[in-house]
Length: 149
Length: 126
Length: 358
Image (cartoon, rainbow over all chains, first blue to last red; front, side, top):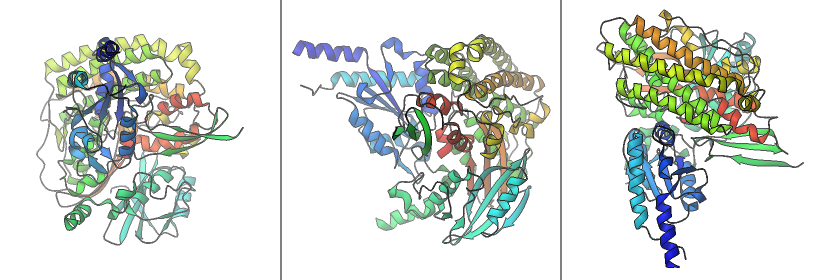
């Protein structure tokens, strides 16, 4: 069975599927995430596919501040993703709350609710930085143990 | 404001907006401004062929004001928003979110969502 | 058949943003829609209590990342009116140039997402490929791809030199050429027409009564556009609003598509008439009084109500964004439609949820 496990882990790193969730962002980061998927940057050439279903996803890209309403959605989505998983927080808002950190409905960065593996700064981060963040996430991904039997 | 402003009272606001609607005005939005601890200003902005016109309603916070959502359906969203942020109640809303349009339990009790006040209270608690 | 309630969102592949609609269905037909908001609500209007009126420009730019330039422009225009600041002519023209570039960017983005909503993925990719040229213009002229922070109170922060305007014009020529190649597909293709014609009809009277704004209003045949007010330099440029008469998703698509050409034309005209001189003036004093100011965003009319009290912090900032105005019309478009058409119709108003909830 060990050979099979090694095979699965290896192929997962070669073709990770990502889920993107806008968690109260201003759209700036979201359109940059989408720009990564479109012809000029085209991360699909690395085998990365954007999926809509958390149960299909290996990588989770979160943009924006966490507020009191979407924290439940965020925690729910992360819980639905199968292990091993990597959470990438994008943009100043996803890191700390950014310019909105003092606003009354803002809790702060994504790490206030779910554990974050990679932080990508920028307002918004450029597509190159996002791709770099995803690649860093994949390195972490390789080290994460698969807990499934 | 350089545009025309008409003062209205809670009794006349609905008939006045009905009047505006008959004249062919489009509702732009409502704005709510806190004047002091007890009173609010609610401004109703209307537009007709790019000309703006405003109604100004000065109301105490603790008393409900009549909703204009029966005249302009579009006002229900902004009236719910004002309910959320300022705590004033609108009577006769066609779709009442009961102060849950934006806010969850945790922040609903912040007095009119004021940042300065809620920070003061946080410091008091520590 | 019994009524079924289907939750649509908040995390839905069609929307880049969390919007939640509770759809009450009978068989496949939508009977009633209740929107649920608040997933992006930050409460940034209240940040005026702790940030001064200059710092608020950065907050206003982040109301929405797609139309940030226009938000900042509207805010600056309001404060300038309160303080009686006269903006230099060159700055007015530069504001138009950056505003229209962001309109091309936003419309191409929307055309792509709209194509994606009815499953036309190659069209989505094409629109976004063209859009990257606009992002390059943004980066070259403003220093950032998305949030182009050029507006300050009293003018603009950056200038365009002749080399840069020449390069911008050649890039825009390419954009126009490439957009023209898409015209046949976006306006005449069988698939596009099949999915959009007659879907989500909003009549002229409904649009006015429900307070629709922007392309949603113009798609219902009402020629109203805030640019007719002649703010910034629009008064000196030739501008006629684009309208389409049927009020369905196709008409709104048509309006936005034709506005892309118009925006390119406006940038060309503004560059050709660009006067020389200062780009900003020094601002003294503090804002005091009330003002309502409106500009045309890519999505429609945006209104800022600003109340200053003579100190560095404003008393109140209220932002009414176009999507906020377009949600009630959306609620009247959906009933009677099939469930499968809901994504297309919802996208046809160009929803921007971070604008709506601020």
